[in-house]
Amino acid sequence: MIEFKRLVPLASALLLGLACKGPMAGTYPSRGPGIGNRDNHRLGPKADRCAGVDQGIRDICKRVRDEASTFVAKLAIDDQICLEGKAMDQPLANCTVRAYVADVSAEAIKLEVRDAPRSSRFKLMDEYWYHETALIDRYLVMAGFDDPK
Image (cartoon, rainbow, N blue to C red; front, side):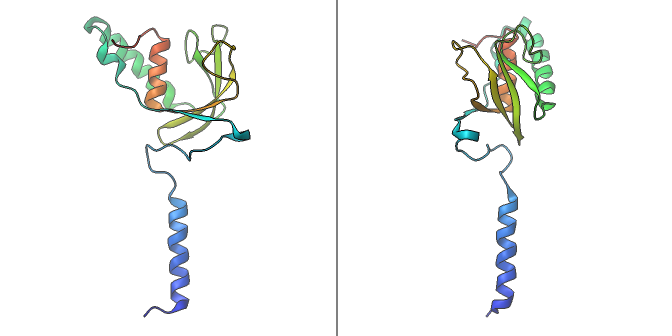
């Protein structure tokens, strides 16, 4: 039989270990409202957009996808990106929807929309959790690679 004195530290260590574990790789942060009860939208991984293009364009698409992967991997809190416009990595005059990186986690990036016209599907101050591959896919769309039919 285990004495009570030995059980308390063991139970405390177990609970502390579970609390510190955090989310598993590839999962999203906890579901629920964002700051100020704003909605957190979740956008998951997409199929490989480059697989659906013509053979002649596939190499270009893969090169752009590699650029997008590098860009997404380097994103940090407070970085600014463009979600609608000419280029995701150049949020300047041609950007109609501008967002800031609000948080990062394992394979996911939380974006907060700071500038969007009323006609956009993006709403001001909404937060979007993008899986890295979904953000890479968004980059490819902005580079002109349409949805495969």
